[in-house]
Image 1: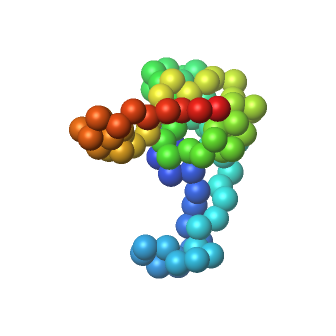
Image 2 (image 1 turned 135 degrees about the horizontal axis):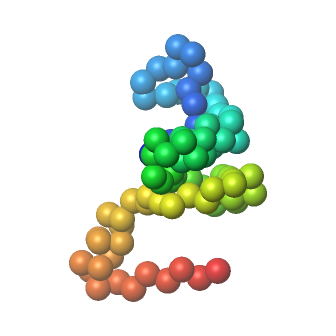
Image 3 (image 1 turned 30 degrees about the vertical axis):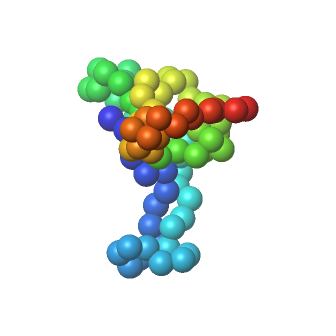
Length: 91
C-alpha cells in the first residue's frame, strides 16, 4: 500500500487542478493509519510515491515503520541511458 500523491485537492477542484486547488494533507495521520494496517497484518508493506525530499524527510521524522518502497519515475533514466548520457547524483 502506498501514498501515491502526497497532497489533497480542495473540494470542488477542477481536473486537472487549477492554482490553489492543491492542498497539504495530514501526512502523519495517514501514515499512522497505514502503520496500523501493518501491525494488524492486513498489509505487509507500506510505501510512498512522488514525494519531494522535504516531504520524505518529514515522513521519516515521524514514522515508526519506515517506508519499504519509494516509487519514482524512471523514464528519464531510461532516456539518458538510451542516449549514453551518464547521470550524476551530486550531493
